[in-house]
Amino acid sequence: MPKAWVLVANHTHARVFEAEKRAGTLTEVESMVYPEGRMKGQELRRDAPGRSFDSQGQGRHAMAEPTNLRKQGAQKFAKDIAHTLEKGRQEGRFSRLYIVAEPSMAGTLRLSMSSPCLATIAGEARKNLSTSDPDEIRAQLPMWL
Image (cartoon, rainbow, N blue to C red):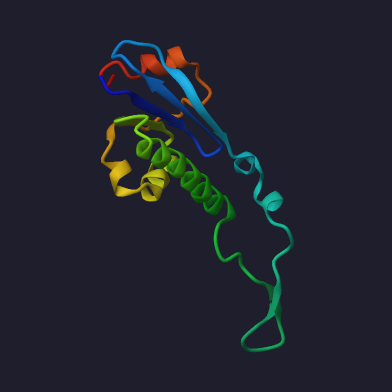
């Protein structure tokens, strides 16, 4: 039976497990951390936003951030995870992928994955189990694996 990978992720931590048998245990093969995901918005900024003159009049005001830095960081982390999954797929390390991720990360991750990698997804749960032990994670997947 071909191997399956189980990705467990949130916006700061991702773990990849391998399962060889339907009722077998999960073995962790990869762990990724994005510590910036735990930082507050002001800690992510390197400097205060610039200042600008009003389009009419003498007033000045701070310029708005062009994008949400926390969301931008989550997108970068999702791309890193997707790259790891794509590399494993290309190397033939798994044929089925199961994703257990918090809802916002699951959506961002799907947008970052290639079409061939998306095609390997055999199941998905929108839960945050990134700090759970392998037995707890395995207990959430009985109908899949």
